[in-house]
Structure formats: C-alpha cells, structure tokens
Amino acid sequence: MLGIDVEQEGIVTMLDLLTNNAPIESAIQRPYAEMALSVIPADNFLSSFDLTVSAYTRREYLFATFIKNNSEFLAKNFDIIIVDSPPSSSVLNFNVLVASDVVLSVVKLDGMSTKALRVLAQELNDLDKAFSMKKPVLFLANGYHPSYRSSEENLDNLKNMYGDQLLKTVIPAYAGFLSQSRVTKGETNALYEREPTSPAGRKLLELSREILALLGIKGLGVEQ
Image (cartoon, rainbow, N blue to C red):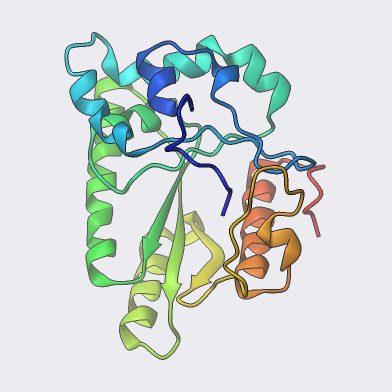
C-alpha cells in the first residue's frame, strides 16, 4: 500500500532507532512525492525488541526517551504521530503506552477481541500504578457486519461499556479499495486519493475527521 520494501539493503527501521541510536532522519521514508506523509518502517526483527532490551535499565522509557530526544525535529515537521503496534502484551507495547498522549484501541467485533480488552485495561492499570500515568483511551469498532447477530451484540456491548470513548466511526467487515495495485516510491497519489469514494476511502476520511476533531487539529485539508 505504501510501496516501502523493508527487505532492501540498508533500510533503517524503528528497531535501529530504539536500540542502535540511528539518526531519525535516516529512517524516515516519504512514500508519496507531494503528500505530507512520512513513515518510519518496521520489519519482523522488531519482534526481538523485548529480548534485545531485557538487560536495559528503564527499558519501559526507551520509546519515550526517543521522542524526547527528537522532540524539536518532530514538532517542527509533524502535526500528529501515529504508532501502529501489535495486539499483544509486551515490553514494546508498554513502551508505546508510556510515550503516548492518547491510546486508540481497534476492536474487532467478535467475542475474543472484546474479551482481550481486559489485557489492555490491565496494562493501563499497571502503567498507572507503576508510573502514575493515566492515558485517555478511545475505541474503534472494526469488522462490523449488520447481518451477524454477534456483530450487533458486540457493538452494543462496546457502547454500553465505553460510551463516549467509542468512536462514532465503525469500520465494516468489507471495506477495501477497488484496485489493490502496488504503490511505488515516487508516485504522488495514495490509494485514498485515487479512490476517495471506495468503501475504504470513505471510511478513512470519516475516521480521520473524527480523530482530528477530537484532538483539536485543523488545517490538514480533511475537515468537512
């Protein structure tokens, strides 16, 4: 989707920034020549993060320290930073929680995923107890299918449990782009720009508008 080949020789990833002190500028990729989107890639080696930092002191603060050390550069170049982390309990995810201003949990509308929210709740509770950090949490319902009773029931459960913390945007089970073409580096049109009226395009715009409004960020060209 973004045309970044993490297998190419010499590419700098998030793991290099966190454990090898690589300069942030060396890791930033610009998938689209004329679009204000930058990406720091990660690959499968990021799964070794927990083992790599097991002997580090204050290992829970590695990502927060990285953000702090690069705060001037980040503030100058970016309005918002999104960190995509795997749905698991790990030192890596705990690092992301420590450094985050807001946590967005994407919840698939099935029984196991809603039960797994207990793990996130426990990690946030541990974070508060150990570091006196309370993080605002938002929830995004994903995989909604109006024909499935379980989907409706799980969505209702999320509404009852989290109220205003649950985003109004709901991602349907079948939200994709019409063409699954590979985007190569240097192309100026993201899939969203090429297919803004596709199911995925419409939902991306709806979600972007809601999140930016909640964060009070304006002037990025997606406001209604």
